[in-house]
Length: 101
Image 1 (cartoon, helix red, strand yellow):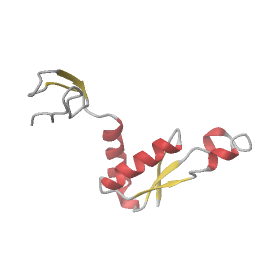
Image 2 (cartoon, helix red, strand yellow):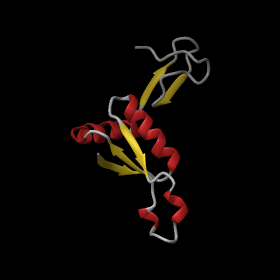
Image 3 (spheres, rainbow, N blue to C red):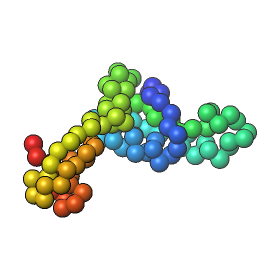
Image 4 (cartoon, rainbow, N blue to C red):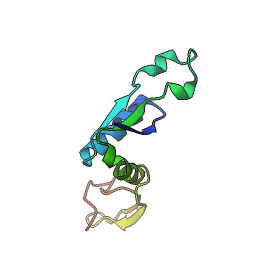
């Protein structure tokens, strides 16, 4: 296993690990509950970490995590209600219609 990155909190660490695993890169969260020892050890030493299970998948994991953390910014009009949608969204917030292909 190789260390990919640390996360600012357990919620993000778990979300990122799940997204990476779903994307084909098995990932584990380490130091999930180390925040309880903050003060005894430096803050940055108690953050949850993401570890890639297979060493050879470290670079693909870095690329996938970057893509997950920086989704593309889109600008499209909903085909059903004509609402203008801005941002990384693939579904209309107004009517729930899917983004056109």
